[in-house]
Length: 590
Image 1 (cartoon, helix red, strand yellow):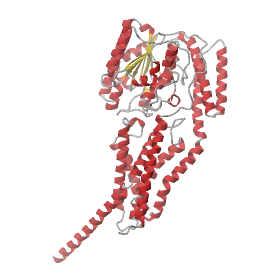
Image 2 (cartoon, rainbow, N blue to C red; image 1 turned 60 degrees about the horizontal axis):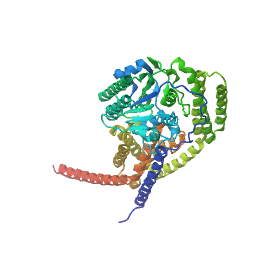
Image 3 (cartoon, rainbow, N blue to C red; image 1 turned 45 degrees about the vertical axis):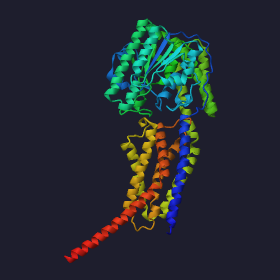
Image 4 (cartoon, rainbow, N blue to C red; image 1 turned 90 degrees about the vertical axis):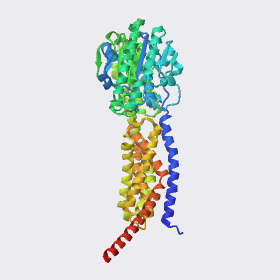
């Protein structure tokens, strides 16, 4: 049997695409590793040691993390615990998490004051172990305070070298009840550490399984409210409530249908309330704050020196008037360490103009330090200016490398589009058929991925990595089948180029999918690095990479399905013609 030239070309293309698929799997692994094994651009270190004695506001700080609790649902449910926190303390109604809004990065940011791109903890797949950077736990250890945690394996993983006590509680149903019981036991036993972190996992578990608008989610929040009351009652029973500051917060919210990780407002908004000595009462503050302010606030409460690199100033608006003078000195120390840290960062990144600007701010802060009076308001302003300088530097870096990224994306684009354009040229008489088939196949992938498997274009929709990848693979197969059906319906069985036409649509789908990849490459580059990308685009980028890999690996299905379809179509046409002939003869006889 003679094998035609077109058949040989198609076989070569199929084999080359399969090889490309395996090469892409290796590239995708590198992209994934660049995120989960991300290395920050600088090692975090403290520049200035304290030369000022800071008063201790409270002897103890208890941090209760209600994992995954949305503040709007807390407002709706209320409950005695949350109501008491609002009445006896300060509620921050506009508190936010940083994207990507995952649990482990949140715990690192809350405990250190560092954003994810500086702490190096960027995902829930973080596996590097203990964080050797300044945190409330390491600082407490250095200055002789006791630390402990209950029911939060992520805190144990990140800070186990600095925990005097850790009580493990399996994150299953009833986790919150057991955490509360252990917290009450420690409080009433008289062995309360100076910092105690208490994790409540139930709300997050229900959020993932039932969604934030479910009755189960509201019930879990109501239980959290009751648990908070039990902790407060234990403090009063032990008569240490006047020496304890209680910080209750969440690390992220949940989508209405459940899930987090993206940058949606309902996911980024968090609950934050503080209650205790020298904290204002019955005050709701509407200022925008981030959870990177919490570490320095806790350190100030415990009289620890400002040896944190906090990217956000402490929550000064939560404290009573008498604390403002010492708070001003504390914020000055933090600002100086922050400024010297940024100078090191800008030097490392070779941003000379930003080094000069940071020197200017540092000179002003050093001058204020040498003076007799320090105004908290002015220090906060300089803190904000330093943060603005940091944000501007990230934009500068993105702008600086734009030419290199554009050139790299152009090369990738040529590789992705050249085979498609070449085949389209040789089959140009049937170009409209190819375009229809390719576009419908591309649309079929995203339609099935979003509507059939319920993956919206956001990181918050990924609850299971395995299910996410399997859904992409299944959607890719659906797109191949749909595109093949379209090709069979539009190709003429007499078309001399039908063999070449059978493989071209999959190249078109790959090319269309590569548009998202190329946009990501132009804007941020092809791997995750400092500064971080727009995370919604990063999600689309990774989805498109996996889609292209599966298209390449399974590309041989399309010519096979088209061949089978055309064979059946040919038989159907022949059968129809024979039937018509017989019918004509019979009608003539009649």
